[in-house]
Structures are given as C-alpha cells and as structure tokens.
View 1: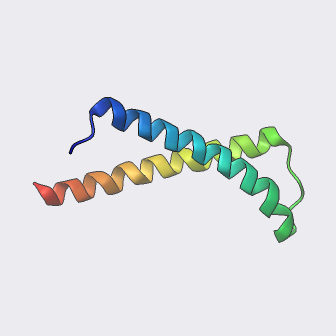
View 2: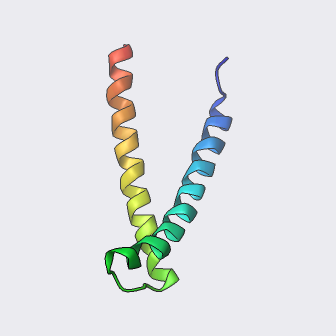
View 3: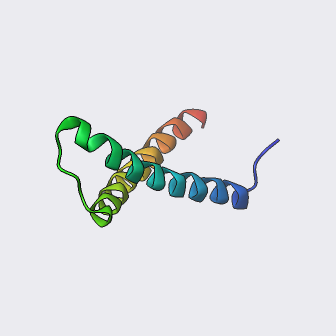
Length: 71
C-alpha cells in the first residue's frame, strides 16, 4: 500500500520536529560530557536548526540519487 503525498508530508514534518526537539535535549545533556560549556537553550535550538537543515538537504540528495536508480 502506498502512502499519500499528504501523509508523506505529515510524516516528514513530524519526524523533523521530533528530531529538533531530540537534538536540543541531546545537546543539553551531552555537551557537558565532552567538556563543552553549557549553552543557552536558544543557542541549542539554533544549532539544532542548522543541523536539521543540513540533514534535510543530505536526505533529499540521497533520495534523489537512489530514485534515479529506479528509472
């Protein structure tokens, strides 16, 4: 069964939002373990958005490459 385009979008947005939230909490917990100073939550959110944007671009490029093999 195929997923509709709308549900694909809902899944992608949900996954992205959850990823940002998880990234912020992970940074807050893990950075001090590596000797990095605690950052303001707003800074953690900004970092999470940067890494999320890079991840989205990477994911899109990989998907397009693999999609070209199907043709």
